[in-house]
Image (tube, rainbow, N blue to C red; front, side, top):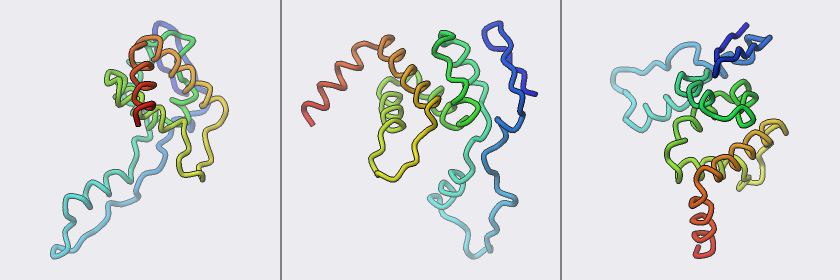
Length: 146
């Protein structure tokens, strides 16, 4: 069982599998000494192993949110996305762009998120826009110009 103390209340998850790592490599890739990876290859390999567990910064971010806004389903089902959102929260432009990208299918072939995740993302968007009202106006102005 997962016990996390968030804002003075205990949140319990009945299944520890809900926060299990998404996928990890069984063994690191092997390279011969004459074919060592360059910098771009190292970055690509690092990106293949997503952060499948919530980070401390993510728990602190959620604890600071109003209870009605806390994205617990997102944290359980998509901890990597919750980690990204927590890290981008202070950067208005980056956060807005990331959230917009999550909610928009520009490729036409995405499965999409389950309804409860979409609902949490929309609630977060409204909350963020209430905290940063100038961001919404700036986004509208930019879309009219572009």
